[in-house]
Length: 195
Image (cartoon, rainbow, N blue to C red):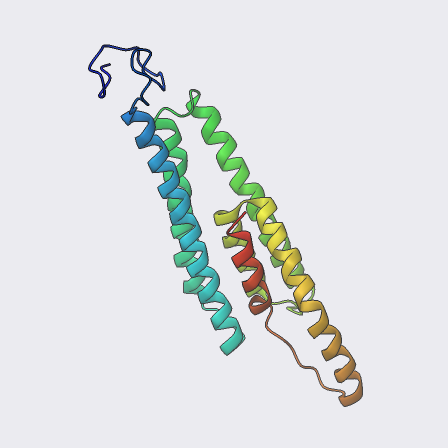
């Protein structure tokens, strides 16, 4: 490898030229870093669009189209696959099979929260909507388990005062009103994107 500043031959993989002290432009490392940052940015942007779309539908119609989950779930899986393969093919990880197993296991664990919420929805005869479970299933693909858990916890925290109000109001008026959950998740989702 040749230093672009002083023109002397230097070892591969070093950060600074031992002769002139200038930073060495390691194109392969820059490519790896740019690809990783690009995929992470795409995951964040796509999650934000998914969050916005699902929250808007939940707020306006109190239901979310299946196609929303199908489209954004597919986009999330494709981006996560790109992330895994970039680690393998760009040389950021040495053991290919181990990387695949770890990443896929992590994604399955992240989807577990959505699966549990879908089960809860079925058990309670949709007292909690299936759309919420599907949302957290897809969000787990984008965010991972702990950020997805934080998203659910934050949404529940913000929703609690409205639920208490409706409970008190419902006892007096004897009506059964429901509130959409995802609009409460939206501000938490914006915060989670910066973690």
